[in-house]
Length: 243
Image 1 (cartoon, rainbow, N blue to C red):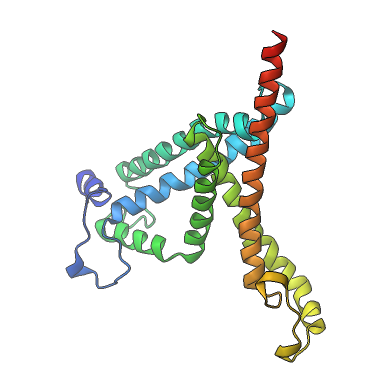
Image 2 (image 1 turned 135 degrees about the vertical axis):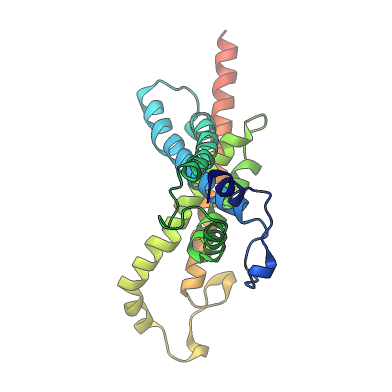
């Protein structure tokens, strides 16, 4: 396929030919799914670098003033997250022009892009991670200080959501594999004797642990951002009174 055919294969507005694909999970716009996947991955990397590395480093050095979570992190995370998304899509187009596809023999044909898009939407691990990141973004934007940039809040939330994902699907399974067998031995075998756990009314099981680990980081992020807003506002009023 020449370069025009390859560019047409990743055209975000190209609809899939249903006569050639019987899979009900096949996205309607495979090119859009493929490009968004590239952009979204690099956007998350940009948010992580800005919020998790550059912002704390600058704040600890004293180069950046203001609250870390509500001011410094959004200021560093927003541009890097936006640049990451645009850069990821640009990288996709560069691969197409250079004909460096997943399969060197096929390059970037329409069939290859369709197959890649289908693989993306069927990847449960990837979709779960994206759900965590999106939830963190929404929660952070809703709790962002009035007048603050939504993109910066989204970058902070994306980083927090990814941390929650790593904890829920990385740390928790490890703890389960190490300690769950010992815990199960202490739980009575008769359902009527299983101890209750407060409002949940059920025994401690992995699904409940995952739910707790999912909700707590969002709640904690909300109160951290609200507290940072109050501290920043109080400091600003004191400076104004002194002047």
